[in-house]
Length: 295
Ligand SMILES: NC(=O)c1ccc[n+]([C@@H]2O[C@H](COP(=O)([O-])OP(=O)(O)OC[C@H]3O[C@@H](n4cnc5c(N)ncnc54)[C@H](OP(=O)(O)O)[C@@H]3O)[C@@H](O)[C@H]2O)c1
Image 1: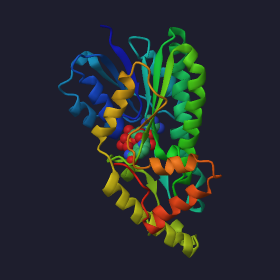
Image 2: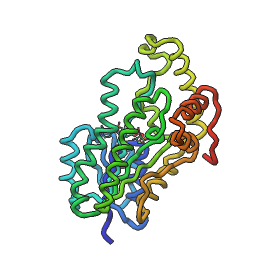
Image 3: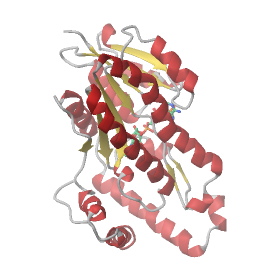
């Protein structure tokens, strides 16, 4: 059986690394994985994890999603000259009161999360369209569906990715190309350590008004509790990616957790959105949990 060629962005750690390993070690060797990362000096963890994989199921390539030249030149390095499954996973976070973020930090985040995703899709889509076949899978977030306090810019980038993919999915149906957004809640990866967040001692917070400062302190505590209570293991998330990869006709959205569903449903209900704003405020600042069926 011909192997499915998979290209994944952001494989130096976390979900990207885990997915690359999972697919490269598939029992039936169904996949040839091109695991890409922007900085090849970070490849040791991945190499260590794929040590026992068959050589022809795996290859590491350098690719920085913010560098168009790097994205385009990656296509030429793919021996099979095609990608069947494109996984846009590279992403960074940014947390804190909006007035404290530098323009550079905001731009960098949009460059990776939104423009990086657009460039990657632009590069690999024409081949898929020509073959009338393909899958595009995105590491999205519940933060792409609901506003989260002090994650304004991150949510803006993921909302944009949601709009991008939902729009693309409509036209791509015609080409037998399926787009799937994996809506992750908190995941126990290095994401929180890697994200650019203002801690309470950060000097840029000195200029923020005391109410915002205190709300942000409360949010950071809430965030810690949420990660302790509902963060999922990477393995759990990877099974959802696998579900999207294996589905004969994949869905547009896959939710890795039901925990945030009540808030998402509230947001989509027809009250103009105010109820959602109140419920999220209560959840974050008064600890009133949304009613959820399970984790
Ligand atoms: N963890 C969570 O709680 C969570 C929740 C919802 C959604 N997500 C989404 O899941 C995705 C993966 O995150 P993760 O949890 O696995 O975090 P992670 O361990 O920090 O992984 C992020 C990956 O993106 C890569 N990256 C950053 N900038 C890049 C660029 N310019 N070009 C190529 N790669 C780049 C990083 O590479 P470097 O090591 O070189 O920086 C790293 O490999 C992200 O899109 C994130 O938004 C995560």
